[in-house]
Length: 496
Length: 108
Picture 1 (spheres, helix red, strand yellow):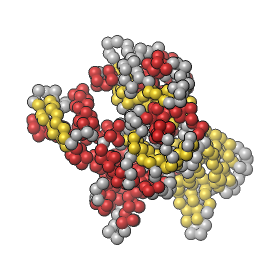
Picture 2 (picture 1 turned 180 degrees about the vertical axis):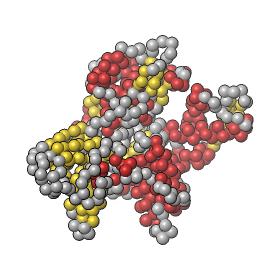
Picture 3 (picture 1 turned 90 degrees about the vertical axis):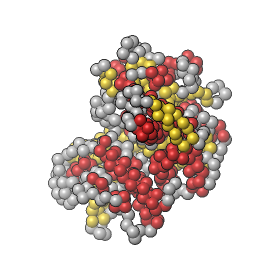
Picture 4 (picture 1 turned 60 degrees about the horizontal axis):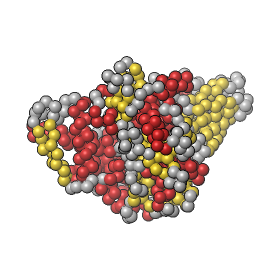
C-alpha cells in the first residue's frame, strides 16, 4: 500500500505522486504511460465507458466532453447533463480521481488515504466538493493543501533552501501567490493570494481570437462554426503558445470547417506578450497584494519560485525578475511539483504551519462613542493569515429591547465595506424574552486544518448556544446519503 | 467603541439601534439590498476609467497607487463571484484598474 500519496487535481492536468521508501516523491504514470493526466472526461455514447485524460481531450464529441470542471467546484447550481443524467462538478472530478487511483495503484500499491491540492483561494464549497470527489472515488482525504504550499514544500525539499520564499503559481486556470518562510524542515506560510480565471486557458482564448481575426482577414469568413472545430483550433493555439515560449515567431496554417480556404497565421512573441499584457499586469497586482498583506517589500524575498505551466512564458519570468531583482527559479518540472509536494506534505504536514486564506467575521453596527456615529461594517473575528488551526471570539451586544432571535451572518472577506464581502452562512439563535438591549453575545469562529470554518454563537446571559459548520444548498450539493449512493454507483463504472 | 451584532437584513430596517427588526432574509440575498456592485452599475455611471476608479487630478502618485490596489483587492474578489453579472462588472473594473496603472505608472 502507498502510505503517503499526493494528488494535484488541476484545472487542465492532474497528477499523482507517492513517497518512495527513500523519502523522495515520485510521479506515478497513468495506464496510458503519461505522467500527467489531462483533466478531461468524455462520456461515450456507444459504450458505457467514461474516458479520462488524453483520449477524452483529443477525440470526443464536444457536447459529451467536459473540460476544466474545477472552475465550477464552488458553484452549487452547476450540473452537467449527459443523456438526461445530471452530473455535479464533484462527480466529474471523482471520475478523474478514480482514473488516477485505479491506474496508479497498479504501480505504487493500494491508495486509500491521500493529500489533495487545491488553489489557495478555493472557497469553502470548492474545498468541500473536492473532499466529496475523493470520497466518491474511494479515497479518504487526509488533508487538503494549497497548491503553492505543496510546491514550496517540494522546492524546499529538493533545493534545501532557507529564508523567505515567494511561490508564483500560474497554472491553466488560476493564479496563486504564496509567501512562506523556510527554516530546515520547518515551513511557515505567511500569506496566500489568488485570482480565479487567470491562467493559461485565458491566454489560449486570446490567441484563438487572434487566429480567428487573421483567418477572417485572409478569407473573409469565420474560422469555426461549431464547438468541435473551435476545440481543434484552440488546441492549435495552445501549441503555438508553447512554441512562442521557445521561439520569437511562429507560423501556422488553419482552415475552417466550411471549406473556405486555408489561412497562414503569423505570430510573434511580442504580439503574444501584447495580447496578454493586461492579464500579466493583474498578476503583478496580485504579487503586490501578497507582499502588502504581510508588510514585506520585494527585497525581503530571498527566493522566487515558479510553478505551473504558464510560468514557462518568458515574459512572466522577466516581470518577476524585474520586480524582485533576482532570477526566479523553478523546482524541476513546473507541472509536476505540486503533486510531488503533496506527497511530501502527506508525511511532513506536522512541520508545516498554514494560515487562514480569508478573514471571517460577522456584520455589526459599529458605534463610535466619540463621534456618536454608527455604521454597518464587516466585523472581522479571524483575520486572514492567522495561523491554523485557530479559534477566535468577539463579544457583541444586542441592539434592541426584548430581542427574541439573534441572527449572526457569517462573512468571508477582508473588506470593511459590506458590499465587498460574501455572506456564506447564518446562525439563528432564540434567546429568552423581556431582556433589555445591550445583552452580550459571543461569536466564536474556528478554522480547521482543511481551511474549513465553524461558527459558535453563545448568549452569555442565558448560556444558550448554537454551533454550525458552514453548509451550502443547491442542486449540485449532495447530501451524505446521496454522496454514499453515488459513490457506490461510480465505483462500478468503467473508467479508462 | 461598541460593536452591535447586526444581521445585514435587519440593519437595513433602519440605522438606529432602537428600530424594530426587519424580516429575516436568506444569506446571499442580503448583499443585493446594499447595492452590491461596482460603481459601473449605479444609475449615473461614470464613463472614464479615472471616474470608475475614483481618481482625481489632485491625487499624488502614492494615493493613486493605494486606490488602485484597494480596488484591485475588491474586484479581484468579485471576479470570482458565482453571479455572472457581478463577475462581468468586476471584469470591467479590472480593465479600468489596469488601464489606470498603465497610464500613471507605465506598461509592465
